[in-house]
Length: 226
Image (cartoon, rainbow, N blue to C red; front, side, top):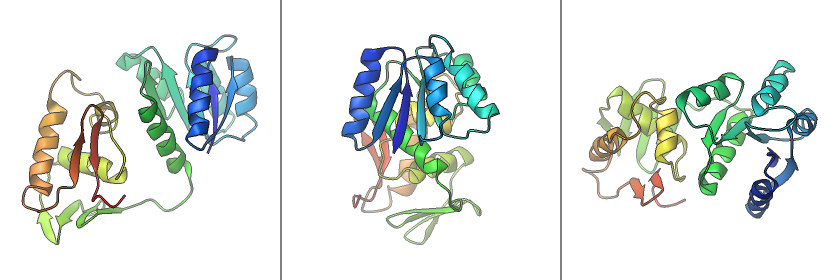
């Protein structure tokens, strides 16, 4: 995967580029908005990582200019501005995802790889399978070992997101963004409550658990073969 990092903090950009390369990806760096826009406009990159606060041209201006020019490359916005309004502005400017500094590199890598997969052409997936657990997006049916499981709408959305990213660690922040759309106080235990309810429905009656808590990181759904 070819990644362009547009970041004015050279030390932070150097660390990020080095880490991306060690993860098997190609990474280039632009230190300001003008240079970043010029490189991004060449169409050589599969994902852009863009800091919001940049010299010469701010990150949102870079993204808006690319979108107006018809460039659809996925963009992950990095910013120390983490309020909901700041995130909304970033996404409305054309960003595809938003990560607040300081960040975990493992989470950033997961998000970048997810953006890259999302951008690849192909038919939309309408069903998922993890072990003997199946989910059909069109019929909203969930079953394990052929036994139907009844889920509430939010539980279904939570399971769908986890199964879509099976084998990957999904952080609480990612669930907050993609399942709840920030529509609750992140200090509440609503995620824990829904995870507990979901686990009771898809795992309790079966010998092999599929929904796992990754201590200090988040959650993962896996049958153990990945």
